[in-house]
Image (cartoon, rainbow, N blue to C red):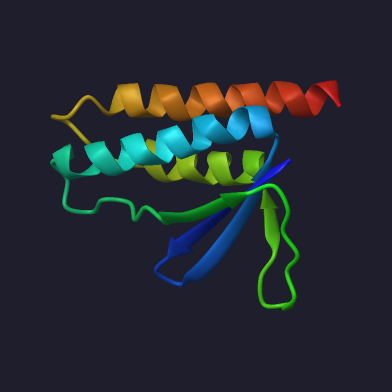
Length: 111
């Protein structure tokens, strides 16, 4: 398993997922950062800053929780699917998010 530390406006967030899929999540977040300014709507979803990726994580404070990757990607999909974008082809971003979501759902079902 791999852990991802994200900086969001309201604090740190920790996401865990299988090592083979972490690269996809990091690449997806980088792509979203690259494309977010191309959206023509005023209310763009906030994206986290990727701070670190690691193989071990020991949280010493009860202030933070580790979130499953599927849960995080599902939340990301919901944020982007609610957008009322008419000009920029949002469908390509949603397709990438949903592809990773489907892979993680399949993996969870196989467990």
